[in-house]
Picture (cartoon, helix red, strand yellow):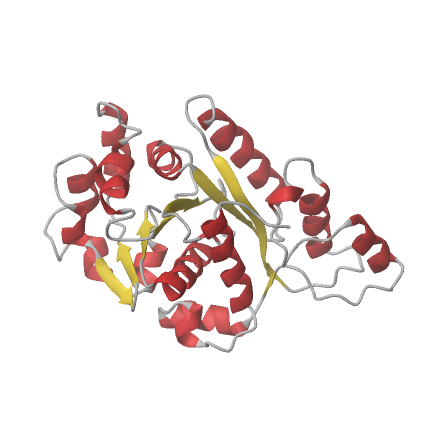
Length: 290
């Protein structure tokens, strides 16, 4: 059965948690599988757009105006502002004045629906099989638009101080509040940039324990990161011989970001590509398949 077209937001209400890296490499794997994916940079810091080398698009020099405002608040065709990243993968770039768009959406009629009506509905299924949205790390109308336009979210987490707050705030202040008005599904909650042991009291262990034992979260953890109760017993008894869970820290991932490339285009042999491929499969299926 051919998967149906789907849009997905990648977001968490905390910066520095691997959101942009996850969004880019997820979109790249979807493009690799279908040759038809678009990634939308809605993050006001523009890290994805800038890292990929689209400085003029970010500053508005290419089109002379704020293209995001033109599309979401005007009547501009989003196709006029899309650029190519690599074969099968395109980008709708961020703009330096996304804060102005945020303000404009607050005043606009049906301001939460604009991204869906003006970009996603016209492109998903016709131009692209999949659309991935890199969300801002702050609460606001751009995030509301991303949630409404996709109906799906992936939440990346790093083993850093504040991951509990980031996850809780995202669930309570973004997802649960949105569900009062429209359907919004969690496709995956994934740990990324792990590097420590899990048989000792490390941040990696605490993050994985939180994710794989927390009600309402564990079922959304991808197979490459999931640990069952039996797995934890084996880890504590020194008997676990399975793979280290989660997307692991690799120099290739950092170097790919520095070079302005998705991981696949920088190092197609990196062992973490299989994990991004599983994320793509989750998007295709619409859920984690345990």
